[in-house]
Structures are given as C-alpha cells and as structure tokens.
Image (tube, rainbow, N blue to C red; front, side, top):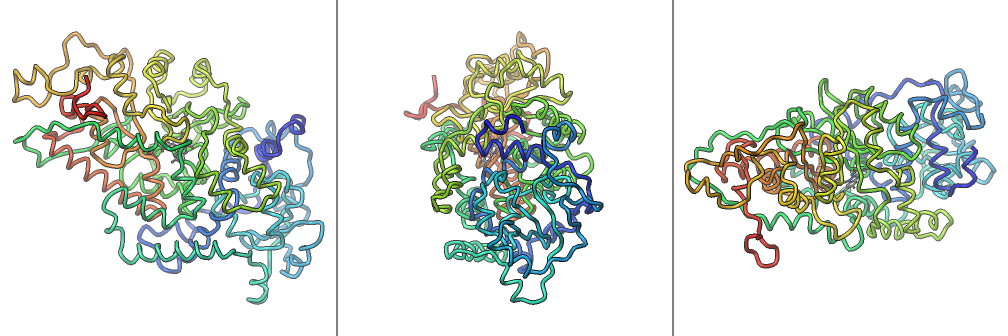
Length: 619
Ligand SMILES: Cc1cc2nc3c(=O)[nH]c(=O)nc-3n(C[C@H](O)[C@H](O)[C@H](O)COP(=O)(O)O)c2cc1C
C-alpha cells in the first residue's frame, strides 16, 4: 500500500491491478476451444454474429482505452513472482476451498431478486457470465473509474466487460483481491433476465444496428468484395463502435505524420526491367531467421478485441495459416497465455515490450516471454509518454459525456496519456539496453527509431536491429516517416545496410555497361557488418508495392499495424488470411512487373526517389 496514497487514483488503480491475481485456481481454465467463436474458421453464422454483436456494442461504452491497457498489463505483470508482487497488499479476502475469492464459494446460488435488492444498498454487486461478484471494495481501484461499475450495479454487465478484458481475466488467479466472487446466478424467467439487462442508450442501439447491418452485408457478400487493404479500412469503420474506431484510426495532433507515412511512398517511383521471365516468382523470405511467406509482419497494435471478440487470437491463427509473423503488443487485449495457447507448434511469435518503471515487474514480463518461448523482443522506444490523440479524446468525450469525476479523470488530455503510459518508464535510456540484454537471449529489435543517429546508436549498443517507425503517427506529429529515415540511413550511414544495398537508387553505371544484368554487384570494397543487423520499416504500408519499395531501398521486411487490426475486425481469422493474400498477390505482381523473381532480387536500382515537391529525382 505504501506509495499508493501518493499516487493519482488511476495510478493507484494500476498498482492495485498489478498486485492482483495470486489466488489459487479453483475453476478450470476456460479453454479457448470452448469459446463459441474460436472453432469457426469460416465466415460466421448469423447466430454467432448476433452474439458477437452483443460484445461489440460494449465497445461503445465508456473508458475503453485505459481499462484495457491497465488490465492487460496487470495480467502480464502479475504472474511470475506472486508472493513478491503481492507482499504489500492487505489481505482483505481469503481464498475459499474452491479457490475463489470471497467468503462464499461457487456452490452458492444467488437469485436475481437478491441481486436486484442490492441496487440501493451499500454493496455493489454485478453479474458477469453467470457469476455474481461484489465489487464494493474494488470500485476505487477500477482503472476505468468507479462510475462505470456503479452505473451498472445489480446488472448483468457481461456485454460491457467482455470486449475490454482478456477472456481469462475472471480466472481465480487473475481476479483482484478486492473483488469478491459470491456465487452463481440463477434465473427462473425471461422477466428476471430482462431485469438484469444493462440499459442501452439510443445512440448505442443505433450503433449496434449499424454494425449488425454491415456484418450481415459482409457475410452475405463474403470477403471477395474486399479487394485491397483500404477496403478493409472502410468496412472496419462501419463495423466498429465510434470509440473503437477513434482508438484505431487516431494519430497525434493534426495527424500529419499519419498521412505522410503513406504519401511518402508515392514519391518513390519504380524502374521496371522488361523482357525478363517472371512466370515463377516467390515472395517468401526469412525474418530474424524465421520463414515468412511475404516480407511483411503484423506490427504490434493494442486492443484487437475492440474490433472482434477474439482479438489478437485471430491474428495468431491467421498469421500461422498464412505463414507470416505476428508481433504481440504489450497492451494486447488477449493475455499472452491466450495468445500462446492459440499458437501452432513451432509458430514464431515476436513480443513488443514496454519497460515498466518498476524493473522487477519488467523483469517478470521478460521472464515470462523467455519461458513461453517467444522468438524476439521488439523494444518500443518512441512512446516514453503517450501522444496527444485527439480523435480518441473526443470520441470518449462524446460517448461518456456525463461530467462525472470519472470522466474528468479520464477526459483530461494528460490524464488519458498518463493512464495509458503510466507504467512505461519515461527515463528508459540506452544503458538499459545492456540490462535488457542480460535478461534474455532473444534478438532485441529497437522499435520506433526515427533518425539515422539512433539507428547507429542501436547498432553500437548491441541491438539486433531497428524498426524505423513513428508508431503509425500516434506519437510526435510532423516527425519524419519510417521511409524517410531509411533514406537518411542510406545517405549518412550506409554501412548499416547490407552491402548490396549501399548503392544509389536510379540508373547505375555498372548496369548501363552490362544491361543484361538485373542488378549490379556490390563494390568489392564493401564489407558486411561484423554481425547481422536487421532494418525494418512500418507506417503507411497499404499496398504490396509500398512494401516492395522499402525492400528495394534496403529494408529486410515491413510491418503493418492498422491494416491487420481492420482485417481481423471485418473477418476475424479469415480476414487476416484474406489480408495476407492481398499483400502477397500485390507483392508478387509488383515483383513480376519489375522483372524480379525473388525478394533478394529487389535492389536500389529498381527505384528512384522523387523530390516530393517537384517530382524529379532527389539529388
Ligand atoms: C491502434 C494501434 C495500437 C498500437 N499499439 C501499439 C503498441 O501497443 N505498441 C507498439 O509498439 N506499437 C503500437 N502501435 C504502432 C504499431 O506497432 C505500428 O508502428 C503502426 O501501426 C504502423 O503504422 P500503420 O498502422 O500505418 O501500419 C499501435 C498502432 C495502432 C494503430
């Protein structure tokens, strides 16, 4: 408890959550297989859709962002050293024989009348998935604020709860000690059931209808109507609540960088070679030594469940069936255990890390990543504090309009950013890379490098690579793009590139002398680095041709964030598979039209960098 008094309520809530979840397991873990949505790989039936819809509506209500982030981080942080993590928490409740928190074990049946009788009393009870919980002690610890619980007391809040929490959040070991599990709900009639339903506002009903209609339309037509990744974006907007959409689409300030991320690719022109046999073409490659069907991965992006109830698990399954690599966000809405349970044997998974200010907690996360056999760590460094994402702030304001204490807490610009990033160490620095290296043997890739200087720093400090990224434009607005940082590296530190990429773009004297060759030999004076150093780029990749451009300029592979969030929103696992097919076919088409059969054939001489103002080659 010690420090808790001196912290903001939200921060205190986080700490409380971090300490949560150390009770023995009573209930058997709900397996993902038992989830109605998880077994189907085809487009869902109408009934399933309706059930999903129920969950999706919830995304329209209150405080989605911080709630998710806190709970999931807590989940990650809470497991490795329970005793240590838990040591300063007063023992408010005692675990019962069946392992549930609270004085009354699961055998107890509780009628809807008993629950409704609590409506005006001191205790605040809610029902989640047929189980009854006393939330009274937890109200002030709730990262989303106490209002959302108080406003829905004596209700079945499953539909609000579900899209915001990992599906194992209610396992005994994950329930905060201050939440008391009381027993099971028994209902005798439809009237009783109706009496427990949460109130849905007119806005939410309309939103619900809109999402439902779009989902049915997509199901009727199939994913064949989605021809490119922007089609996914359009469809996803109609299938998301306003709050979810604002979270996904938002970027910092005036969203200039977000726009530039894509438009910069328009300033790279192809120089296709013709009359080359291209019937056989192969877009496969290796990323950090792991096979990937295309040179493109799923960038780590938080809160996939806001778009689809299975969330990140869709990405895991879709990545496997499509043969690409998923990078998991530290703030994923599915727990890391859920994700690894959905992982196929041998499937590579990379983990994006935010380093917690409390190093022992960060250490626990890394220990878990090592233990679960994940394959690389992407250390995100462009978000020591959260960017100012105005769509996100406004959408929450519009939806949660009541000027309550909870709203004020969350609605403050600073409050939101702080809430999201309060556990992230803003003082993280290059020396910490050494500390991280001591915690893991996994490759460490620095994500969010935005200058050539920092790319060199990453190399000098022992990182295995960099991701040239501005976080999808969500952090500092008007920064340069990942692509422009790659150009900077080409100009000022070409030694970081593989030798064959250290040549200028555009017409090449060696090729003009030997035009039958597809690409020139690297100058014999050029030596490889003394160790492998990978360069990845993300931000604004919407076309296979964007990816090919980055590869021609020397990137090892590219990442896509929003595109995959939208794909899984629209079609779950199948959406992810469809997105990979789109990217693969576009990449192959671009390669063939360029005269290249293999990813390794893509070279600087196949592109020219145009001056963005005057559309002539960059000097
Ligand atoms: C909704 C959303 C959530 C994100 N969450 C994270 C995160 O938790 N950690 C991280 O390192 N990057 C995160 N990112 C940034 C992505 O990893 C990636 O850098 C960015 O999305 C690439 O740009 P794109 O969306 O244009 O493809 C997020 C991006 C979005 C859009």
